[in-house]
Length: 566
Image (cartoon, rainbow, N blue to C red; front, side, top):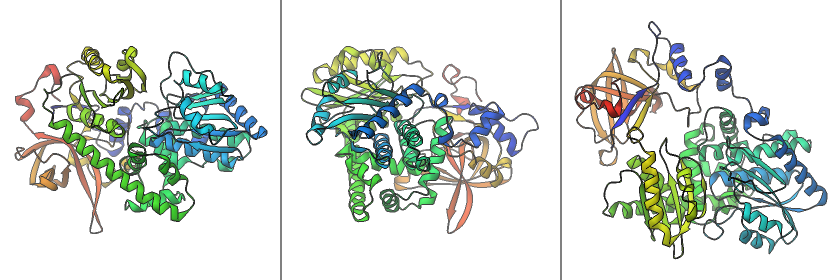
């Protein structure tokens, strides 16, 4: 494990030791300075009440899209909602397709096959659609299309109009289409939902506006959107909708995972539901995920759920096998960029592999699935290194490419892998500084156990849902007495402690910290609070994020890297 810098973001003022004082510091740490910001955070507006400006959407684009879709209904035109094969793309497709269906349009969805169709709207896929839908006149993209200028121009020659709804980074020029509904603030599902919201209003179907919010929660969490600002509204209200969902497909999937619908959280979505929806598109076709979330037939749902869980297991096995392949290769420890390419790597899981390697080495990572002529790559980054910008600097090698500062995908010629990797490594090296290479453990504030109780826990729970930009509050307590120490889990992978401070004792669990067997009797711990239920009894438990001997960092403190000791 790399050394990690403990960074305390705030502190309690002298004489301030109440729950309200702790919340004040946490608000500050989340960038919520004013009473207005804090009020909106605690009482997030319903997405139906958010305006275009705060959503980062242009009103003109929305109005143009509504006008063209309304015209399609008047003319009885055939419409396709063109989606994507990841969880956000699947949910985006379902949200808009269901809205157009309710409004009476002649509409069908299309989810591209990762392996045969590739990412994003393209002429080849549209020609395939036209074989069974020759009177197609309008395509509405969701979660793609903003950089597909050339392909859209080809499609328009077929007499088809295009509306683009997307949230990815646009290129230098926007596509020439009937309308663009685009925001960098939202995920694809949220953009699609806002377009659906305006369509419901235009067609005087406001009672339908809440439709699809359960799917927007899944798309937002799966695409790792912020839990602060406008996305918090979509996630918070979307989770409430998901906890009451009547979708038979989602209910069957949730039941198969052993989760109660009413207890669905951002964790449930991020680590259980979204990976399963993604698995079908990674291993085969994502159409089954779309069928599941939109299903009405209970018997069909059972079959789809079994298949989805099977594909998820296949995905898990493929990741483990690929990591064994990667780790089995002899190579020097990467210093700037982790770059792996191999013909045996499954194209559908290279993003997961890149995430794993970026986490392991705390460096930007690229994993490439090598084909005979072309190679497809997926990249994941670390804070402070804009990976898509770095990749775009090598535009001359790119057949296709797009993404975000922390994640990107691209296609290059197989013959270009070596020069591409060398030049990308050079670019990344120029961007990395010693500080960026040190993983930070962000701590809200230092407290003693005298502040840790159920009142504090209950107040912190009001700050949920937790996720990107609004993590579960993290505390530091020094000089904690270790009363009990044992390793638990397969191979002693985890650490279980009983600890004492200021006369109060708590159980603590440290996942993945089982190798720390040199701690001694006094420790400093970084932790969050969680409720542990065992035999119908509830207790407060400390979930350890990091741990050290109370004196160990004093001996090897490198101010150049870590700064002054906290």
